[in-house]
Length: 157
Length: 336
Image (tube, rainbow over the protein chains, first blue to last red):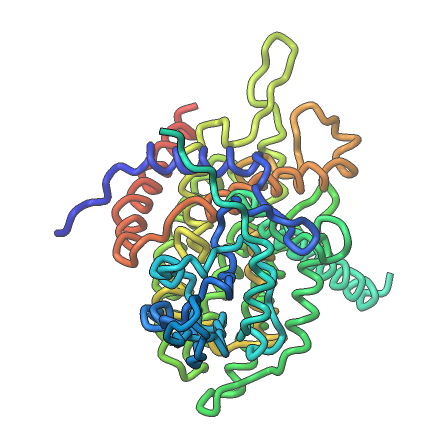
């Protein structure tokens, strides 16, 4: 003979009281297309790119668990800063795409970027009818930069 | 009036009432259940509060293709939903809605109720067997085991009421509850059987009724985590709609039976006999609504029992309790 059913009443009625109370409370529901939900200021909605800061180091692309960042670049020779100096090679960004159909919003790319070229933006309304449109290119990623909130002011010591 | 004309009118009236009632109960379930889960439920269908959601669901179901598995026993498979539906609707034949508002006042009303409502087990077994699907078969057999186990406490709870009322006619049972119980001076007190010592019987009846309906916490026959949808797995389109409406119609039916047997049916203390025919249906429907809310409430609160717990509850607790209940009621009936 296995264990008998424990005398069940207190728990059962506690549960019924909970559901009854919940029924008369207002449900915390946002009717999304009609009402907008306001995310917290530093929500992780979309990743934006500051092209000027990018050095084509490929750290983000290599660390990305989903391999959803595509970077191409080439070297350009720059004249030296001082007259008579040696011309320097400088990496130039040709292509920087993030495929948001693969991205899992882990934010590792933002973390590893050594030159602060990637930022989180709280925007979240970029769903598409065609999945290929979720591949955001350099231009689109730069547009998101305008929606990035300002960095919090440094703490005073 | 012509017999056949009267029959058709009664049929249409019962069908319309039962099916509309089922739709209302479905809407109530959607709405109450979602609010209990901090959701708002149907909202956009029909403009305000999503009142048209059950209608929209029904229309959608009707458009769906009526599929049958290749291996299915077509005739039995097709007929099963109508058996379940029929047994549910036939219950309303004997439910009195007022002193003169009933389709038939059988001498064996309570017996007819129990007999006709257990035919739905046949329909469920037919559905489970004919679907040629392992989920359906296991679901159908579980349903049969469960309904047979809970038919017993249900019947025994009704027997206690029949002993107390001294009649099996449902009209007689309601009248027995409307009659004077005792008098304080010249004030005549009448009370439903629930107040007159049938508390245990009522609780047993309601537990068994939930099990008969295969609703949570007794919904092992259609337990979706292990059996997909049990005996309903292969059904689609209008046949699934039949099962679905039948389930909610039998909620109304069992609540109406419970209200008639234990809560005084159409009678309400304080309503004079002259008004009973007009107020009767409203009173009965009010009691039914309270019981249905109770069904919905526990469905959205309690977890599902295990199969062995379910059987143990019926055979170890409910049936012995119901027998003791009968013995006590009989002793009181004979002694006083």
